[in-house]
Amino acid sequence: MTKLTIVGVGPGSPDYITTAARKAVQKAQVVIGAKRSLNLFRGDIKGEMLTLTGKNVDELLKYAQDSAAKGKAVVLLSAGDPGFSGLLGSVLSRAYGKNVEVNVIPGVSAIQVCAARLGMCWEDAVLFTFHNGVTAKQKEALVEAVKAGKDVFLLPETKTFTPSNIAVFLVNNGIDKATRVAVCENLTLGNERIVESTLEEASKQAFSSMCVMVIHS
Ligand SMILES: C[S@@+](CC[C@H](N)C(=O)[O-])C[C@H]1O[C@@H](n2cnc3c(N)ncnc32)[C@H](O)[C@@H]1O
Image (cartoon, rainbow, N blue to C red):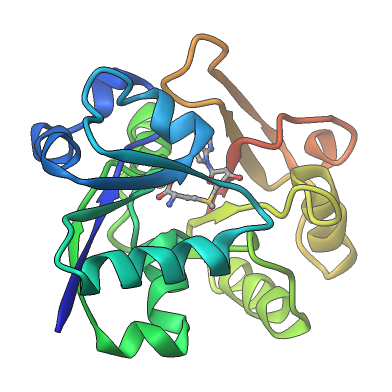
């Protein structure tokens, strides 16, 4: 059985990288990640470094598995936490992932930072990600969660289901336009911004694509 290590790199600031993540990267012979993630470990990467893009995910995940099969220490860098809309899902969903034992090093998720910034407990919240696409079933579940009075944390889709699209969608589906929402942009980065408003106000605003949206109960 081959072994791949998937490392959560946190929300973007080097301050949120764990010591465990850094140690794993320092020991790796192959490190694969998006440019933004690789940049966080510039001084730590001793092995081969490969940049993940939207177009080469299949190719590089296969390369990661093959390298691990040859006995190399391979690390995949995943933004935030690998288990929430991250690379863990990408590895597990690929057929060839079945022969791979995955070692996950957790990272601080954007969801966690968002909850912290807003001073919210999130054990009873409902989480959604639309980052990998928007389905009618998911949209229906979102309306149901809001109607059920749950706090909702979601990762919007960057083009067709942005926070303002979501606000319009919810109001069109019977949610009170005065419902309080928050959009937390670029968390932990120099341009971090927390916007607290209502569905009505949010429907008219533009937000950074790097954001977490909260719909308050
Ligand atoms: C592929 S998902 C990865 C989520 C990640 N696994 C996590 O746990 O945070 C990327 C999306 O996460 C959100 N995101 C990631 N980093 C963020 C940050 N620093 N501030 C706000 N949102 C962020 C954005 O919605 C972005 O489009």
